[in-house]
Image (cartoon, rainbow, N blue to C red; front, top):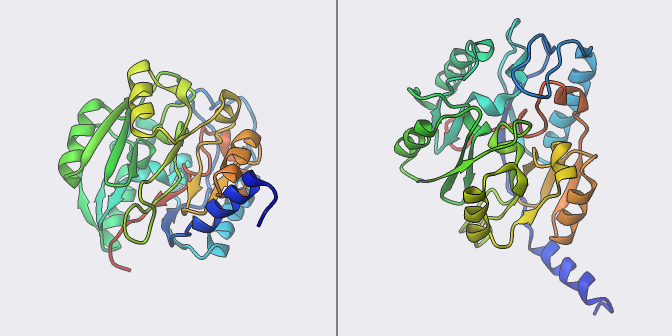
Length: 294
C-alpha cells in the first residue's frame, strides 16, 4: 500500500484510464505557408518554413501510429495551405460526414476536396447549407455535440448539425478572437462514453475564452472538468487529441500537462509550433473519423 494517499489515488485513476482505438484524417502540409491573415495568429510578413512544418506534422503522424491509431490521408492541394488543418474539413459520426462551408473565401475551395474525399471513402455525405467549420467548432462529448460560435460557424449551423445527427446540441459562444474555433478552447478527454468507455465523458476547457452564459453551462454540465490557465490556453494547450488515456499536447502547456497527470492521463508532447503560425495545432491537424467503411 502506498504511504502517499495522493499518489495512491492517482495510481488508481491511471489504472482506470482505457485507451480507445481511434481513426483520424490528416493532410501533409506540403504547401503550408502563411500568405493571408484570417485569424490573429497569421502574420504574412513573418517567414514560415514548410520543411519544418512537414517535419513537425510527421512527428504527430508517427505519434498516432506508435499509439496504434489508424490514419487516413487526404492529398494536399496546391494553393490551399490550410488544408493541413483537417479538423475544419467536416464532422463525422456513425459513418455520416457533415461537410464544411468555410466563412472565408481563402479556404472555400477546401470544402469540395473534403466532401469528395468522404464520398470516395465510404461515408454518407450531408452537404451543409449553413456556414460551419467542421470539428473545429463541433465536439462530440458522449452523446452531446458541443457547438461553438462567435467567429466562424454560425448559430444556424448548430440547428443544422443537430438535424443531421439527431443529437442534443449545446451552443457555446467564444469571445476571444485568439480562440476562434471551439477546439482551441475545449479538449475532449474521453472519446468513448458508456460500454467500453467511461461512465461520463469529461473535458478540459479555458473559461476566459467564453461568454458568461457559456461558462455557466460548462460549469454545470462538467463540474469535474479540468480548467486550464490562460497561459496554457495561449500556447494552444487545449488544441489536443485524446484517446482516453494518452493526450497529445503542446510541450509548452506545462500546467495542463501536470493537471492531466494528476487525473491519471498520460500526456504525450508534440511540438507543432511552426503550424501554430497559421493558427492551428494538434487537434486542428486531426479529424476524427467515426464509423464508415474501410
